[in-house]
Image 1: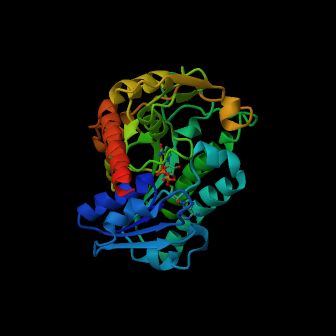
Image 2: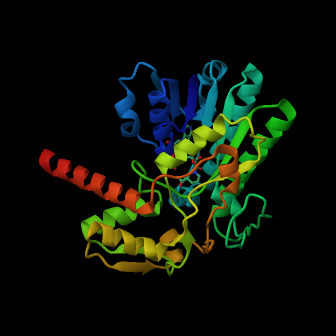
Length: 330
Ligand SMILES: NC(=O)c1ccc[n+]([C@@H]2O[C@H](COP(=O)([O-])OP(=O)(O)OC[C@H]3O[C@@H](n4cnc5c(N)ncnc54)[C@H](O)[C@@H]3O)[C@@H](O)[C@H]2O)c1
């Protein structure tokens, strides 16, 4: 199978590259390296069936050629991460909405019957209140609720684009509403919580919890996430409706910080930072974010394999090995 992965040098994209190369597929990854890193995919550069292009998706001369010969497209390229989303609201719209349009239009133009998977986000639930987030819920957004609304609506627009192209052109599009994904290669610099906690715990620094830490999240290991995405992308039962992709276990951010400290055997404390200080503007977060995963299970039979403790232990181990190599090399 020929596979195109946009955002292929990113966190989730690079794991998908590995999965499909292991399956024996040919993979073309495109990425502008804005948050992705060449080092994420360096191990694959020797693979005969791997090709990588550095390009902005909206200005990529190779798009037509890439789309026309492909059997499956994972569209992951997007402006992501709390800090980037707040700092670059125009880029969020340009890339997240425009990039998806560019891909879908090219698929129509080329006449290819490629299976398409579009990465949406649990942020589409916006300020929707509810213990459990089900795909059928009415969605609530507050325009004054902070810059995250722009990101959430860009991702909701992606879902509507998917449904529109599916209805009008019959494109086989799957939409994954991704909840927090964690694991190796996730960068801490753009506002993702777990890599930051692990680094702080290993450095003996306080773990910085934004708000009072009572907000809950669900974390899915990226190695589980990519399996779910693979199952969804090739699934005949897809009808373009969004599918929650995540792990149903829920944990508060304060409990997560304490769990990381415990697993790392660290003497770090926890430091609470008001949202306004952390994000530089009036900010409202959603208190609870736990996916209902019934649609994912019934469509694909997917069951996550990684526990949060296993993921945290794995990240700690990798950070220690990296720190050791840095020391030895200096
Ligand atoms: N990681 C999560 O917890 C999570 C949660 C919800 C949704 N998602 C979605 O999953 C997808 C992948 O996210 P990720 O966590 O791997 O983040 P990431 O930042 O590692 O991946 C996004 C990639 O897109 C690339 N990119 C950005 N703009 C581009 C452009 N104009 N042209 C080409 N490439 C471009 C970036 O360089 C990066 O490699 C995104 O669409 C994101 O919205 C992720």
